[in-house]
Length: 266
Image (tube, rainbow, N blue to C red; front, top):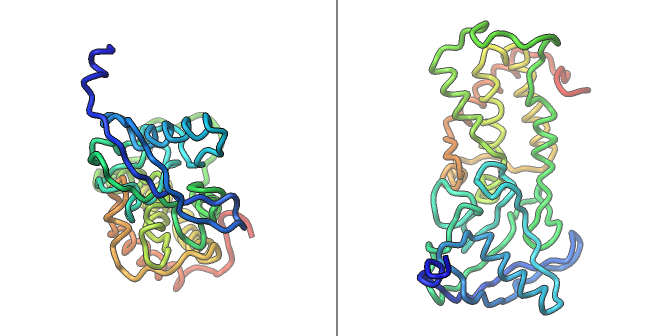
């Protein structure tokens, strides 16, 4: 084992990291050296090494979001050299490996920057706005009782495929961080499409899109002006076609549906 480890490529990096003690505190970029970093480490493992060194020196470690570290949960997310999740397409920060960088590289690391994602500390931001959008309508009503048979409701394969593709969204927020307007349209459209494409989601389809878009606007997200940056940085490759589908649903709902909120409370 030690022989295998000794053969790994090592690198030394210069980091510029955003440090901010709290939501109302001023922030600044701070320089750190990341030494003896293995090319096989993930980006978050590299930050772990830097934090271990800071703690040994009695300094405050860099705060950053993480959970599963398997590209599933959507918790991780930082802007690396100006690009959310870093240079690799279709990749979360936790799945980005240091072999993507070279010895001596300078790397800037910043949090998601959007009005609706206030900084909590350092690289950690408050993404609870997404939770409130989901609570506004990202569910279906269902009768209580035993689970129905899998084949009880027939779903055409194109609809099932569309719903599955939309459900791949992990809610990381990279779409918001990349958008010049701080728009959450890709995230919301994925959630609306996920349920709206299925027969089970039809009863609330129009109320759902009205309520979720209204909540998105209330949270302070910007409007979509089709820069397509969101699609480019999405780690799950969610297409902007879902935004067009949601806009069609929104127009239909606005023309035909009562204005009161029917899903997610008054």
